[in-house]
Length: 404
Ligand SMILES: [Zn+2]
Image (cartoon, rainbow, N blue to C red):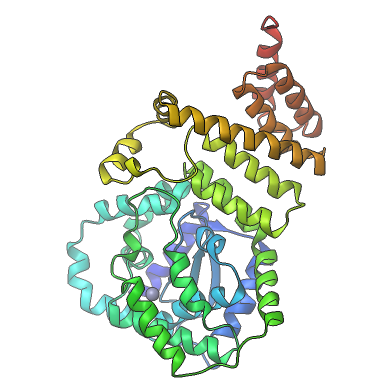
């Protein structure tokens, strides 16, 4: 009862703190896939199934003992089709069906008492990105929810959940091989960062792939037709396009520029003629600034990461611009952004945010007169824009400058 009570409190707080991403169409889709994936029959006592999205740029999924399954915007952005989505939900639902949280709580109860909750909350906060600090306060209302959201269960229980997922995919004629791809996708990282807490107790990737492959081999599946696979892919990508866009912006807000860029590529590949998708890619290139697209070797140490955490974005960029690779990266990224803004505006000249992004870029590139034109275009299209005052001041500043 205590666990269930804590879960409810956690959810209330999460909603209040803006941690939940609410999109009716997406929720409906998750609900449809979720309900199909859950085996028929009554849910365990005192649980009711709910599928929700948490605003976090990090790939994460967790199930609360009351039957609520959370998928992060970061996770939804990495997945490629409905079979993969079904595999994640099936895995998480196994934790609820088999009451893993209760087993965990019973045996780890004393250990949890000893855990320094403050330190844990601090480690946890970055996993939620911009809403992290607000959400970290939840640690005081719901210790168990805190633990469940970042730590996995014992290896045995995680294996049980993976095997359950494999069987559900087979039974539902989803492409079961996608389960293996999902494991790999969840390990995708475009950043040099040291916040991978939530994989700590998971069986290693290779072990998961090994025992799941064995499970699939001993239960051969009629191959899923290419046609059906295309349906799973297009249905998934069209239902998640909006949340993927949201997550690209979340990544930028959290200084995860390389992830933003990689995900924007996925958007453009899915709908190459969407002005909105091209704009996001342009913005990602602009925000990348003097950083290289790929992580450089010298960034790959915990020490380098810690140093970077202490710098403001401006300080970081100034340091990079003092080096030849930094200046070269900036030039390439600006050229890419320039081409993409033009393309986005070519497809839709009324795309206000494309005018705004392009104006920022042109100012960065020391082309203030052109920048002013696009700022004006932005204000014309968005007269009520919240940042209208700030943009007007920028135009005034440009106008006050003597021409070159
Ligand atoms: Zn799990």
